[in-house]
Image (cartoon, rainbow, N blue to C red):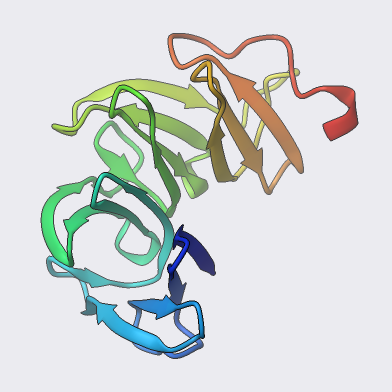
Length: 182
């Protein structure tokens, strides 16, 4: 998966390309690898399936799927880790995407726990948006995340083939994606 970071730089997360050892590759516009970040493993700065990346003010947040955690890095140095394997608060099972909102809260798509969680920068669990429930609010296997200018959270759910819209301040809204996007 390739992520545009700056006009002159992209970041690639892959286990099948130039980075065959669960590392993050920094690639310039010409496709030349400039550097790598991390290595394969479960220690600080190591990854087992880095997937979703979000960069804000020189800080990189990486959804480390195989280690069931989010790592926060600056120029390749780990400065914080969030979560461990499980299904309770403070635990993830296949976190696949991470974004940071205008108030610097982390929003994580916890893929195999069928939920989206909001954390503060200290790792305090603020809100859980549960999927895999009956009714119109159902979503399964959240995979992609986006924010709009009002702070609403858009969740692309692979298992239910849906896109849902949530308020960051409380329970899911009953209005879903406009018909043109369904």
